[in-house]
Image (cartoon, rainbow, N blue to C red; front, side, top):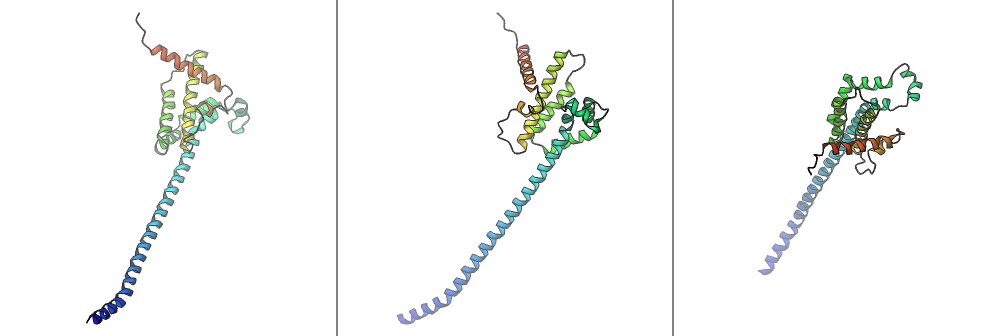
Length: 210
């Protein structure tokens, strides 16, 4: 009797073994196919993200170039400006300010608010608010120099934030180092700006009663 049960068990085992092998093979293939499909989907998603990041980077570069164009002209030396045929008979200060007042330049500012980093937008806002609120008429030579140092400081901060937004978040450069390459008197402007901040702080500080 026991021999019959052993024969039955052996026969059932010989039948079930290939079935189990087939089932396990099918399950393994299904899991492998699913993992590969997920891996492909992840790769496509990563590629799409990189594509969007590259497009955003290109948009930012174009926007930054258009945004800074008036300042490029403003900081061009008089000799170089006069030697450029396309600027013949033009005043660089009027050209720069005129450019900033155009509808096209306003559109650039609007695009900046959409594609730029928060820090870049804030730095640009500070710079433009200085121009909107600043009083430059009737200033003495020294007062005008101080005003100039203030907006140059704001511009240098904007340039530094732009640098950081282009992948140099951990840069060790200061905002003033961003403009030293095209300004021979950057150290003078830095000192004027720093002194004005100190003087403004002292003026705003309430007097101490004896």
